[in-house]
Image (cartoon, rainbow, N blue to C red; front, side, top):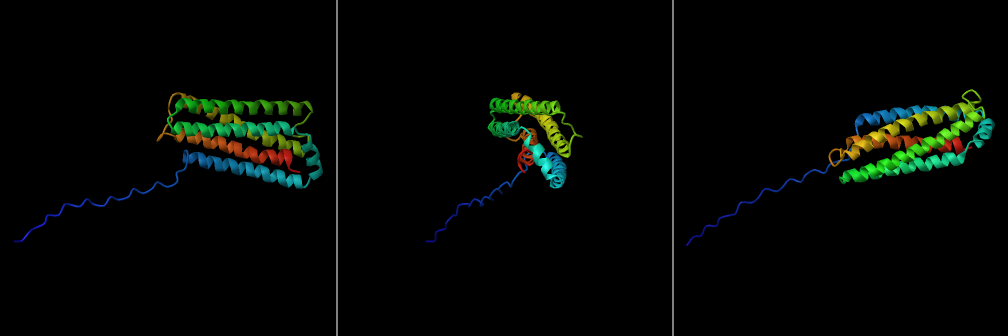
Length: 204
């Protein structure tokens, strides 16, 4: 007696989903802007180094008169603000909008602290008749720090806009572009200061 076997249909092998590659955080345009700003600061830093090499004694003497404690405090404030921004992005990715807003508020307060300390430095400098024309070192000190100062102000405006968006629950998984774009700009401001502070205040 002949038996026939019926074979069960075999399910087709599932095609593995390709792993998503690295993703650029934020909008592409902000990275072009950041690169342009870093280039501008780089030109400033190179000009400072060149001029200092030809006026070492003058630069050392006037650099020693700067308030390094104020500069160090501002470094701590900016690093703290950047940490808070990172925590805000992490919170938003977890849909914790209220926590993200609170972290951004902390970053704003730290940034405002930077502004207050820097304005105190400028007031003390102007009280001692320091100006752009008083010496080559003072010209670089005021122009470099003020250029960065204006970037901090713009960064604070962006942080306030991000804080308002987080309060409204605007950010979350799949909708992080605005928050990441602002965060990238703020980290650029922090990075520039981490170069500017030792270059202008510390290194002899």
